[in-house]
Image (cartoon, rainbow, N blue to C red; front, side, top):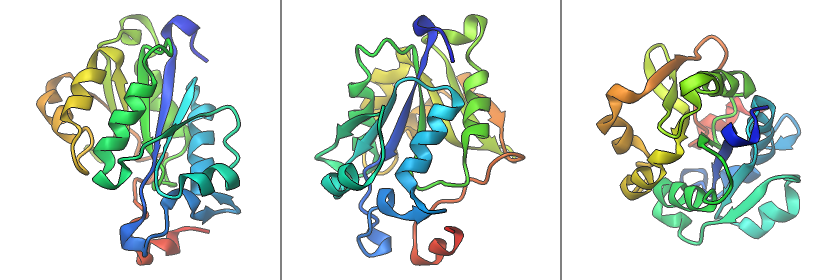
Length: 204
């Protein structure tokens, strides 16, 4: 775990309504006997993130009742239907005053990405100058940028301003591509998404 002054918060985006899954919120899908939101939150904790903030939206009350998210900060996003960008904005806003110098952002619908990949991205910016508020890093898979993504606190306002619709931080990362440290994680994680009914076969 990093020292308090240099700690990295975990930010889990788990608000989506699963439109292409017939309106089944992804947070409530089951995998290996537990809910996806539990797996993802535990992975951030295991990677060394503290605190862990979880952004909820679709059927948030059901998620609160059914999921074991003890120790996490639950953040409501009433604008979740607008897309991932609204959840990223809500999550970053919730981290103000947390003491975290950076946030490691992950998505609830990527169960193939576990604590190994998260810790690897975290480790790229947890020593020396890399604990700075200016850090930018992302997992890559065969050279293609993916999740999780680490944002130093100095970037939070800019990321939030650029986060619209379902694009999340994509435009911000593209604009700052030269500053992003890519951390290859293809040997420890699989970056597939659970988006459609066909993808449900990946859940166990």
